[in-house]
Image (cartoon, rainbow, N blue to C red; front, side, top):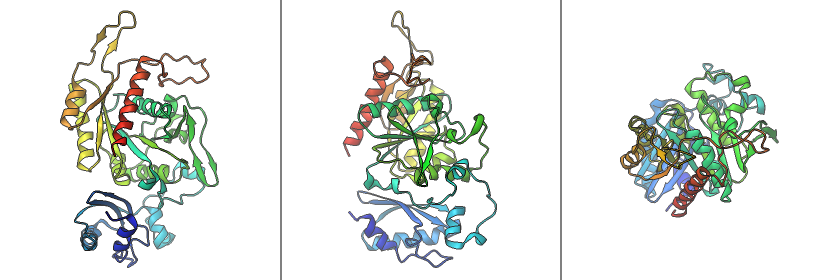
Length: 370
């Protein structure tokens, strides 16, 4: 199996068609993943009509070193990337918006470098996805993250649901991130490092952005945040298969996914689209979590299946994966007077907290097989 350095050496002669500079030297070949005999990579280009020419040459160069199975992803260079090679006078002026995170940092540099994406760093990316909103995807994300942290893992969360950010509130986070030596320091709560758009929006104002700006923010969360050493980074995706989900699939080809649904047949049917998107982009689906699976009476212990039964199992069968957990309908028994109060985190000794601990053990076991 070839190393990343050997692959980059083979690709170094390929020049960007307009600028006639090496794509490798420009750092416009990224996210290289080698899995068995297959290589996947992302190519940044000035215009999408350059795609066919570049892909043909990339496949040829890699075939010369014995790589036959190549998966190429292309995207158009961002404003910062164009400015880096063309200068400020040649960049497109169509998108002059700035983000609150840029204002916090004082600059937008570093978007070209994503050191956390290096598979050699050992970070395992788990995207939590759903087909529709309201199924408890964020609740699953924060509780799985806390359960992984309880098991001794170093965990982070990116609240990538940029339009519907909720992670800081769900975890009871009241402070904001700070900047040290030009890098944003994530807020830590329950042993989990958190970064969210919610930290940069005042008074719960709506986010009104076009798709490219969402990708810019996500890339900044990956490149300009000092995460320190992590074992797992969970991404709470927006529901559906929109721009952010596509950006995650492009930026993080090594990411795996957990699909969240309710037992209702329609919810499971819609969730299958998110799972199908993962499979079509060669992202492994770790499994399905069925949330709101039942309501358990606290007095008698009987279970009422309010939203029906079987949706999670059918979804898992459709996606050729397994049903990892069935989480009951309910809310944590937390009180605002508690020093570690949070609206949505289940305590370790609660019945639902134990279910999340079991979910965390299953996730760890799946990665232990690698």
